[in-house]
Image 1: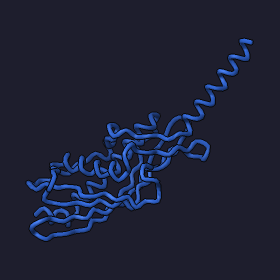
Image 2: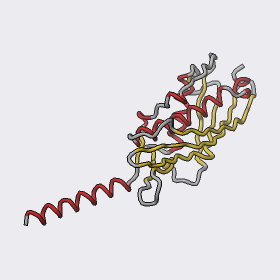
Image 3: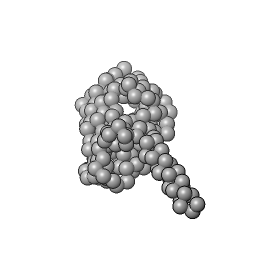
Image 4: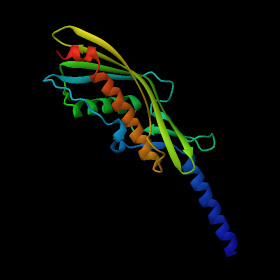
Length: 198
């Protein structure tokens, strides 16, 4: 009797663990800090401010999915965000620009619209360790009121975590943040962006 109860409990435990392994992985915004290898921040020295007016997700994935974690069909899990991806990445754009000294405010001098053409997070598993990578393509439309300036800046980034990591959720979150930080670095170094602030 005791043996059959233990076997039943073991079976339930295995099913629960299997269900957890195949479920979605939701990335909390608080974990999205870039790796040191992709944490450079070029200062933006300007008295102007900006506002992100819109963010549009043109990818074929669902609105909350960033990509996949796991190497095979058996252990693949969708990596998702709590808010829609467009909102999450627009928030990362805003935070990274603020960190560089370019401040956001309602009715800012420079209006921005973000279009996400590609954002694909993939995680390769090697035993308990994971190596996430990210491939992103985005367009930022800029306009400045009063001087009738507009620009369309196309940006892309590729980032792979510097080493296999055990904490999969944190590694994925940091990879997403690193990928976005590289996008923002490309934006602030872009000549059309610099002209917009003159």
